[in-house]
Length: 385
Ligand SMILES: [Zn+2]
Image (cartoon, rainbow, N blue to C red; front, side, top):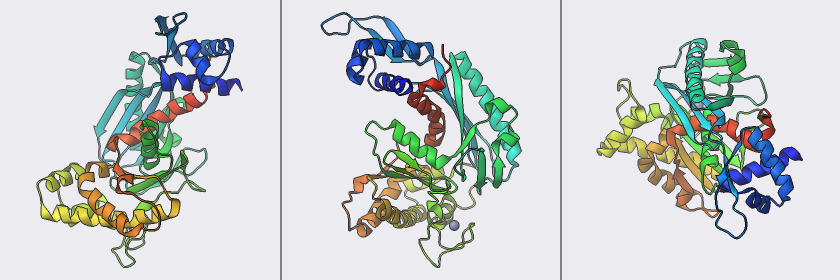
């Protein structure tokens, strides 16, 4: 009960600060004495701060403004991408305070080597956080792969990295700081949900990089499937006789709307090192006809696959994240056209499909915010002051 009330008070301040103790009592429907005791505990645990007396602007005694602490508890997010590594620290207010990204080709390098470098980056980010007065309370690692449900820290497979059954702890130098892996598409979707001013409760978040990942948020909760394998949109068939796919099947969405397929279609398959989405956006912006045609074809295939998602789960929204967010200008028309033609049995508006506001920052932000959201839901995770 106390745990629930601590979360209630912390949530009220997080959502509506600055509030005085009296304001909080009014909002959460507890007595002032009860709220004061809860506030004292939250201050002791480092979750809240209380400013010097300020007039609250209403009749009665001036209240002292409570706010979620910008120092102390923090979440560390880490990311292994196919072409980069990232680290981010967010404070309890959800503000990113440390942001590090290094370009690194991680495909087909030994997982141990890659994870050793992530661990170094993590240590640097934690040192930066410490210098800002922050204390990392949890660590989550975004990976472009399948992470089964349950404990164990296992990445079952990450085809674009060449990982099979990689247990993060087996390669992490310090047993006290091992991060918990999670699928990057799931984290991108959660970041979108947590950051939205008016979150949509049921939506599909599709993101692309080298592969295509989808995440389902249903009724405000991430749907991971019975084993954690939900959301493999990239391998939904869009053409039964289409080109062979790395997964062994034919005509998968990834063969039409994945980065490699779009580059090939645009005649840019052999471009040098560099970012595929940026290159495609440049060419499309300059009116390069083969690129525009390849993006149109990708959008059509994506629309076809998303029609199945709309018919199956009846979402309020569809979000294009990751590299797709940067290509939205050219993808949206054809995806919307396909959906408009096919989604005819239920109410559907073109605006329900939109690009992510976070774009490629989503997964890393989601990884860092995971710890913050856990603390907001259960402040007793923080050490007592
Ligand atoms: Zn496939």
